[in-house]
Length: 330
Image (cartoon, rainbow, N blue to C red; front, top):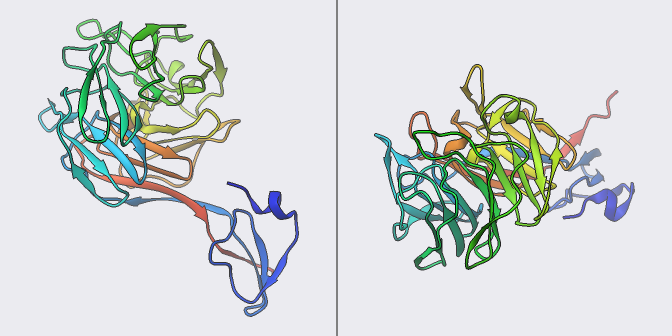
């Protein structure tokens, strides 16, 4: 998406009425109202259609207007395999997924999604959705939960995660999927779980997590072979499945501050390609991000589910060019 400065320079046009679809950064003089106007990008969260059940620690794939969610823990911490699709306004239940999982990996699109790992046993299984049916996939090599990643059904990547109970220690394993099998590749620079992740198999982005506050502030890039350090988050966060975007433009919502004190928040974080910032805009729900599904771009995303308590709430993040009048009285 372009912006007005790039396309037109600093030219200020005279218009008798405001444009119906202003371009980001556009400036014009309205000759009818005799006012100077501009169109900055303004972002806000709004309520979407409720997920079919109250649930947390689930996984998702897709976009704001074509999404897929499945799994998680329902009230009473019971694992569920409920699955549903979202069209930007409402959810529709689909065939239940093969596994009743929580704290697991999900990525892809509404019609080509991949899910893997999580708890309870069997911890290493994977499965895919093709828009009409589920299919079992090959087991991941290292069992773990609380892991995230990115990519597609033919080129996926999973970072870190923690060993199944009773040990529960965060690990550093990275595994890639080529459409037929999983393989170990370069370990993450630090052991981590409950981190956020987005991007592709060759342009991945990992941020936040545990086991300690210093780890939960860091971010790192993955190019398909090696890792490199990214900028720190504004605080120590467990982002979980509440992060979405790309390696150069990412968002995270409902971030959980990894203590002390451990605190669920309604924070919205943004990475602009250079640094992370905490936006003044917030979510309506104060729910741990590690407990919600995610997908989208920095201009259009959605989060759903979460805890505490168990929630079926859906919130949509939308940012668009919004007309503002410039005060020229001083």
